[in-house]
Length: 148
Image (tube, rainbow, N blue to C red; front, side, top):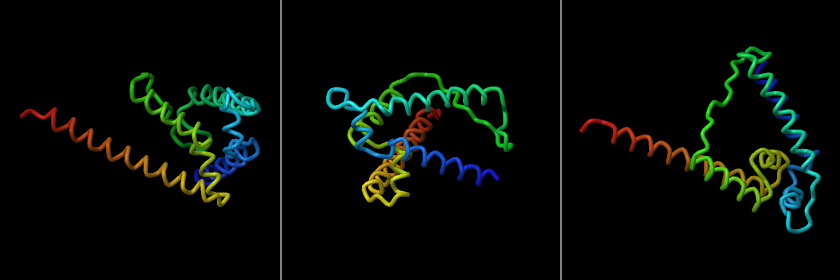
């Protein structure tokens, strides 16, 4: 049942991205272009998403399990550190250049758009690179903490 509900939620999310215009890079770039022909229509989409998210997180904080019985694991990190700022800046720069972010990119792959396949491939390569760097950092930290 969890897999079916995840599939249905993903389909509804993807459909919402298409209907709202979030899967259209030109529409997103128009929203991000504050100095040019700014298109504020996605502000309503983002405002609605934030409203739904606030309510969903408020409800989730009161529970330990989902309605289908899975454990709820909410994020606990609260620190605003260099890694968060650099990572979110890179995300924002990439979003501003491409007009696309991970969710709409996956929708684009499902729609058969070749540019989105390239984007998702680059995104996966970046994720693998990040993981390799993190493993290297953990090994370095472990070897430096061992008494010598």
